[in-house]
Image (cartoon, rainbow, N blue to C red):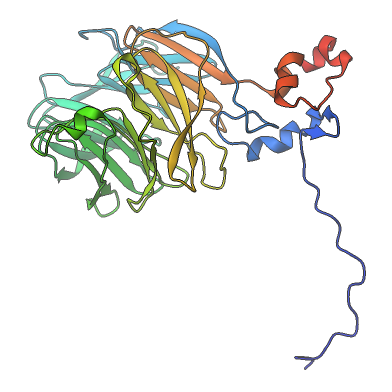
Length: 396
């Protein structure tokens, strides 16, 4: 009944000022604010100073699981469970929830399921749990399980992508997806956004709908490499790697030496700068997408491994649609081509790396209170590092 009338009482006092939590308070560091800032920090960024990235190698190991019958010692997949780094061979893919791995590429044109980590039920690593023959018309070249372990996407030299429902010890075929003209070289699957992305030796990058099991679109990836400009339309190059962001559905692709990021609708979000062309041993060999949302502008959206063992972290300049190199791992733990990467941890602050020699490493994001006074001074030159912090065990 009072609609349209001027209220008789108005708020004459201002609302309380919003409290913005910051790790830098005045001229000192407030380490007590770090837990509240952790959830707002992008992947691999320093909590309290997201514009900086500090990664340190925590452990190095050698891959021994799933190596039998392999031509080389390359690492194919990695996981970090209960403080243990677990890696499997090149022709293997890990089922994370059940701590098993799938082996493919054999003459049976199928896969086999093995034990990756010992449990109370399975006490022998590499033990065969089930064998599934004739899944393709030819050898399987790539297999990618979903994060929940219920779906398996496989690709082979028969140019098809096949989707399987994995439950118990059964593999049930859901669909055969046709669209490539050569063998399938890379796959990724996201149950969150219902997407499958596949790359082939024909240079095509295709996106499929997991719910309707139909073709959605082809991503128009153009390369900056000089060889691509003179190759002509008759020659195509294999897609090296594809990966899906499970927070916003963005897709990262690697063709030749060029990185691109597409959104869930296939629109180009960002691309490697045209002047930044890799050559020789600096060419990227693999790329993964992090789960960095779009509103974290300072976040790391992609991580690349290179032929010379370098690992580089990339952000996005959304205004210019350019991928920005944010960080290169200073510690040269690996000296041969990187074959697999995985971002793990609650906020993706741990990076797992595997190379062609079988070496595996774990790189952890350093916390602000673990940095030395000199490193703290480089982050915020105007902040005075208290003398007692240097010798206080609480800040070590």
